[in-house]
Image (tube, rainbow, N blue to C red; front, side, top):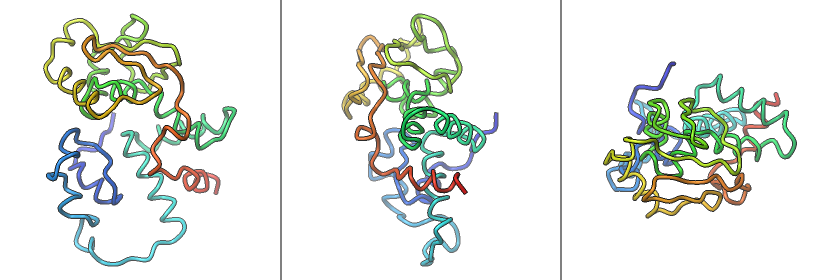
Length: 208
């Protein structure tokens, strides 16, 4: 599957927001956006006027990049959110947070979503005791998620779990950091999700 392979720090600068794509580095002063808080490229520091469409597009790109999805995957998730009951914007965020790679990241099984996705891909995660290696798998409330067998001995996973615990585990998850195991208690409410995302702009963009 196609993946973005250039510097992910450029993505944070492009969106003028920390997307936390490089794990612990994003929490230090080594983060690129701390040193160069302007878009990358020759004209990055030039002042620009943004149209309504460009503002909506940037919001969509920001959310898509946070969760590491390609356009086709993101649009498919949006369509599913639009079909389901409830507020479309909130449902979109809930579906993104319910992805197995996102749950694994939130529980601390990877220092970033990219690393958590790799752990999932390499058969390193069990859902209700069964191996699942599909990052987009939708975890349901009540499901247990844990690191499989020998993968629990990997130092990078242990370090990621400790880092996640120090930053704070989200309220909708219950995690045993030492056992590298957790439960998806309930779908997060909008108040528990990032306030830096304006999902209404994305709904307006896709409604055109």
